[in-house]
Length: 114
Image 1 (tube, rainbow, N blue to C red):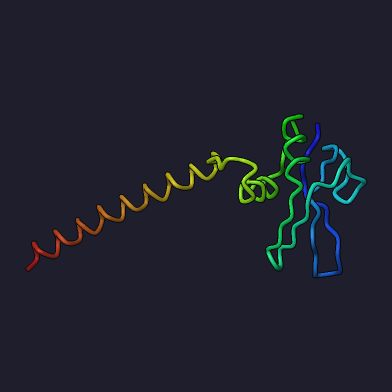
Image 2: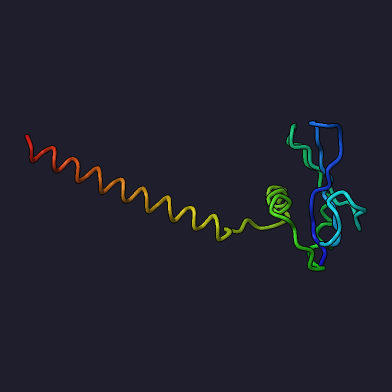
């Protein structure tokens, strides 16, 4: 299976990354099949080879989560709600509703005491 992932390069503690297509069993910094872009997390600079990325995605390449978010920001992929994000949002909404109920109950008890 072909994966789209980040390949680290640069000086120590000043990492930059290349977006590469490689076999899923190869090492992180191993020889890639193709280099498809560049990402610098310190300056948030991103360069994407849109045509080559589209070709790899149509061939069935699977991007990692970080590469997926970069492609979504670049407009090459539609933003999708991942299950973990949906579960997190559901928990937050449940907590908010419970907090609201608790505040209402506290207000009722305060009014009853006075």
